[in-house]
Image (cartoon, rainbow, N blue to C red; front, side, top):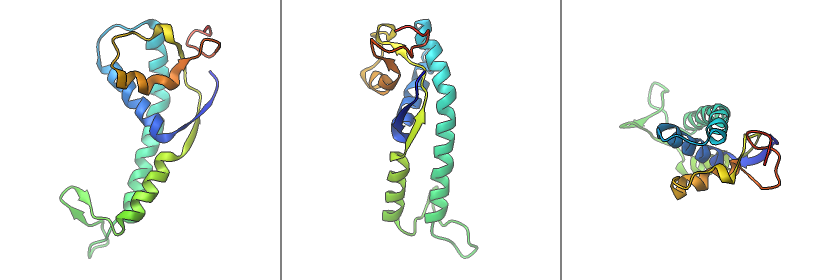
Amino acid sequence: MSAMRLRTIDLLTLHSALRQLQADETPRPWRLAYAAARNLRLLDGVAAGFEAARLALLATHAERDADGKPAMDGSNVRLSSPEEFATAFRALQEQEEEIALCRVPAADMPAEIPIGVASALLPMIADADSEDSADGRS
């Protein structure tokens, strides 16, 4: 497994796609199942870190009520500057992370995966000449 640099938003998309595969009870090739389990473990940490950073951004950019608590509109935080929040949020999504994903050969990707999920899984598909697949072979 060699490290690669991916944007946080791409890692979160991969995390979501792997969760969809996990929820589907269809049996998968063992290399894909193994790589998915390993990558989910890594990406759970990325997702938790992103959520903590998102909540911190909300707290920073929230309007405050008389008690100093974030002002709410129903279940939404009222922002003091939506434009500044949007800029900071985009920057958070665009941050690059170095991560060593477990990769699988393209031959182990079943045809019945929806195109959107397959697209999200591209970072974990090993190239034909790669040695960082789930079993060390390409």
